[in-house]
Length: 166
Image (tube, rainbow, N blue to C red; front, side, top):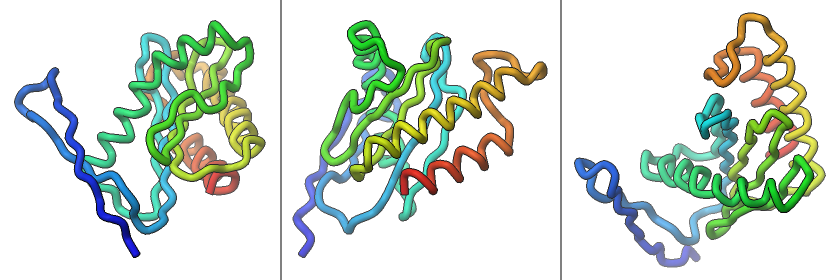
């Protein structure tokens, strides 16, 4: 049986015209969802991939981005405490976990996933995406810290995510 869902609201104090938006938290039928974002210098998102089994509402998409961006401060703290590139689980929100990986150029790979996966699979995903990211950086036509629009990069990251994370 499904548990009763709780309704929670987040106030948007920055943008008063939207007021508050609400989302549902609680037991739902089991579904797989992940959000992968590459964040460049100045905390500027340069790539995003979202894979979900079900169609997410606008509020659920906003919540996923909110969780990722709120964990950026924790990533910054963890970078100085931990000398490795793979930072593992830096934050969690209910069933969702935020995993992080930081490159030597301080680009942050952030992964929000709602089901637990083997640590080796996540680490392998991050290192393979890092290799693809380096190939993008070596492209003479790519400007650093600008959005990645390559369809080949997108397809390869999507394939890696489906192979190693789903």
